[in-house]
Figure 1 (cartoon, rainbow, N blue to C red):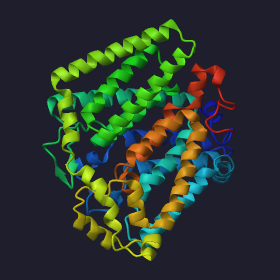
Figure 2 (tube, rainbow, N blue to C red):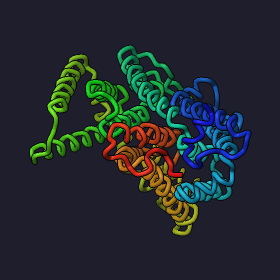
Figure 3 (cartoon, helix red, strand yellow):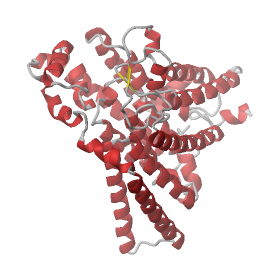
Figure 4 (cartoon, rainbow, N blue to C red):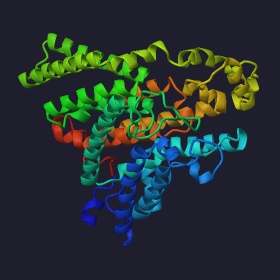
Length: 445
């Protein structure tokens, strides 16, 4: 079984050393464990367990997410299984964007540690973890990757179910923490992913994947059920930007399909029946939510956003009094913090783009964003055009919050989801006429 599995490695047909089958098995197990940890152990769970992950004090190791350690261990074992030099050479030749991103992370690490005295755990969890997951997930054999894909669909179904349960009962699977204190008045569901906004954003990405090639492997009735069921759960998570953006994108996609039909595009009767059934289910679900008051709390988020909108207007003044030299090379974080306090920015800098310039300066930010774009380009090269909309949606929604400018595992969650659910080997199985050349492997050998 091990020999058959190693033929599907993304970087080389087969590891060279005699000891590598064991390393490959362990690397596969650790890759699966890292994906499980990143989806099941949120920052709120770590806080609930008493670890100072998002608070001051405590061990420095407690500031890193467990998935980061496991993903790095998996990457090390893949290097043993494939051969360190062969692995690095394959990455450099086939995926140069990963090398560019690694250098960008190194630059950001130097700026954070040596210049700005910022904690390194934020860079490790936010950027090193997605990079390690990219390489490890891409190296998974096809049978393992397919089981992981089905498990991820089941996880989102479970996450939405927990969201419904938490909304209607008021109970929480994970307590909602803010600055180390439990918020008892928060109505939004935390579910498996820990934070309501993360739940809303990631569910939105999942729905965009379902409406694209990533959902075509399911029968139409099951696909329609997953769409309606998960769409309804988004109101329990209360993410305004995520929900409004998703509805706008879905409406645009539906409009384009309608225009295509009016223009004479052929369609099957089965597809039309499926669309009509889905529309009826959405209508029935909407009527039920209105009658039960489900939307009242959600609409209340637009009426009272606890200062979030004001923060997004005032955040551009955090640079007041900053010299051009500091703005370009390294802003004075004490000065930035004093401006935040003066402006009353109780939440934070509500844009990761603005926050990056405020924390790291122009030069480091521009160079790092170039590396980040190279990494995203490699994801798109791997999964094809189907990944463009989910990733664009993620960065659009994330730009309305501190996002990747702070410590978060959301980017790792998105990276894993896109790679697993949009694996072109699965899409080729349901759309063989569109199968790309070399689609039998995640990475061409």
